[in-house]
Image (tube, rainbow, N blue to C red):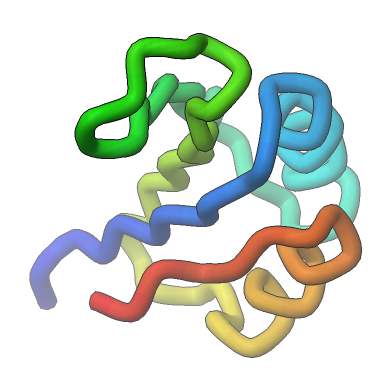
Amino acid sequence: MSDVRHVLVLPDRDAAEEVAEELPDRFGVTEEPQLVRDALAGEDDAEDAQWLVVVEDPDARLDPAALDELAAAYEGWLEKP
């Protein structure tokens, strides 16, 4: 079984940090999620950057629908693989 990586796209850093903090409690994620700033193409203004929360899921046990729901609560979404 190959490792699964989930990428949640959030509108700003605060939302990304809150989602990252919720992952261990709600999903039992043991590995620290990775936060990545994703500047939108052609945008120089840092305010227009999205933030990605990258979650490693080596056992493929996380429910993508539940992750999408969590991201949606912060006006984000789960990137489809």
